[in-house]
Image (cartoon, rainbow, N blue to C red; front, side, top):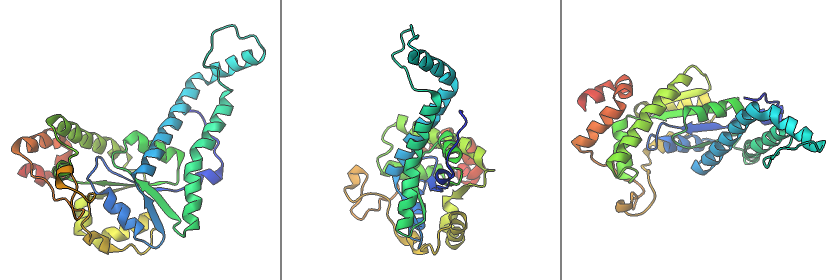
Length: 284
């Protein structure tokens, strides 16, 4: 990608990003734990989506400028000298101008959110959104080098039970796609395990060893005095009808899986599931 010269005041932004291989893995639990602290606030999936789109656009533009920047600059000079005789409806400013424009555009969001976080005495801030791919996470780490990634994963059988209850999975095709996404993201994001800015959290271990994981989150993110009582609140959906994937008390129990559905989960996730949840794979 094109070489960036980003002002240090922009690079100081250090969001905590909570993500997972698919939905229903525990990102909301981690979000709520961090936000229960004295000094942290983790925004939800709308901010996550906006930052994902911005990061995708910015990294795409960097690749575009790397490929075409020299030609763009030549065409601009020809247009300025009134010697451009070719059809160029996509004429653009010089690549350094476009690069500066994109730097100023991209970093406004994290910088303004940083300043706002400081103004409300929650200097540790971030956002959560499931299913960030390896490449999206790498984009965050490259553009925001002080960021920290909390990657929470959960065994795919329970994930699918929860997703089915929420009506995220309604057909065989959706089940296959969902399981394949879990396996693909788990495999690819594992490549980032050596980066000390990435923390992998096993959902089941979080529930079994609450105090240890609260302390781990505090040490990794800088959040202070996380309220472990958050674990006791059973909230996993909106208020509404079970038929819509909601619940009157905002907790919907996991759905049962058929033998066929369990077979799909094993077929699509087996190699990855076997490494992380071998006992469950054997039982399935």
